Length: 523
Image (cartoon, rainbow, N blue to C red; front, side, top):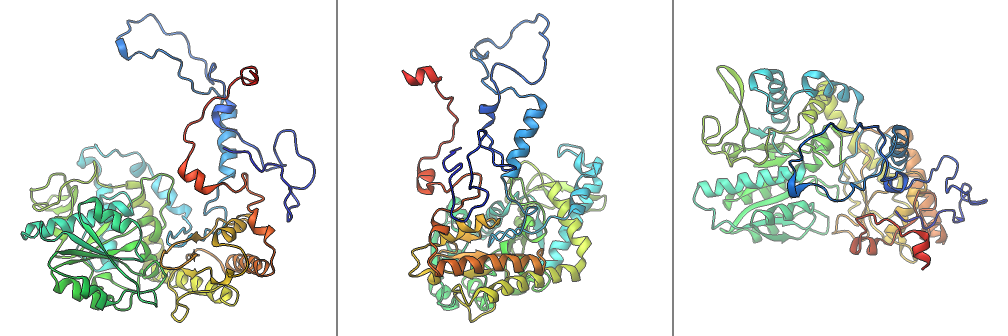
């Protein structure tokens, strides 16, 4: 962790002016080293008695060197992680404008439900007879997902969106194999405005990826899809609403063309939050779609997972859903664990050890039940309203591509408005950190030069949106007024100053190396 920039004087700083401090702290902005720099490897935070005499059975596997782990007492460990948490930015800190990520508020009611002993304490290897309530909750969640999408079946197994993509595409591959076209169908069409995981998923399971260009208005032309279709095409992967924040108005015509060519239509459901309760994706001709529970249904996002990315499937693909599969029998709900048996005769196999992420299921269903059908529909409407409000309030200062059409859940800007300022999208993002916000998504989607993608979600009040808009307007006015210093040195107020991002990406430091003793270093 580089300390470069500590104590530097910033032109717009109050907190950074004045003398440097001995500790490196600046009042409540605390300097924090790595845990290896704080603890001592020769001590431990607890007293462990010497073990009674024993026969060593480790043989050649016995450790021959010290563990070299830092020893901290409980207050030291607690302070370390609390101080680190204060350097982080999350949805509980403020508006989180990352476009295409849907960082919405996670209601505490959902957390309380997930911590109920009947859900929090169960283990996936328990006998099914002891987890009937959990199976019932999974069935209810599945019922809601099917009702909201109009699809035939849902696979709860996938642990995240990309894992869900993999599930849906594997189901498509299994369906082609079942009708004897597994080898012939080896191409997947992916629009150039798609999420990067789409082509990666297709390539991972052996498909060749063929790109479909976007129209000048940011959408996919059905004629371009038709021109790319052929007997070798297995599927089209389309994000709708797309990553430009636009609804694909020709989606039905596209789906019809794909089906007529004998291929399947995979929809990336990452942006389902924009159309939840407004559109049934089955009516659009979709065969498979993953649903990011963390985006649309307000379960926690990120943190290393596991999350949950259920996949809804059409009639044509439902038989190929993976196991474990939740099946209703005369004796009640059961999880069918093996393919080729009743309820899973054509299952594509097992994608992961167990049946999904129970904590995410509980949180998502709690959100659904607390909102109801009308509340979920309003959440989508409010998300779209918030995005269009932000765009309308900034369009006089910042350039917005595709401005002739209403946005959906996110507002997209490009860097045309920065022409002649000597500044870039990255400079604006860094300056936004000094205003107390996590930056918006930058340089994505790739079809827009210098993109700035902002998704406020439905969680923010008008006052919250107005303050964010005012901050961006102030930055835009400063950029146009030639105040380059405010941007080029930003962030000034973050715990660490701007990194050399190219060097960090190409030569990352992934391991802490203990510094040489001062005497040795002098020699």
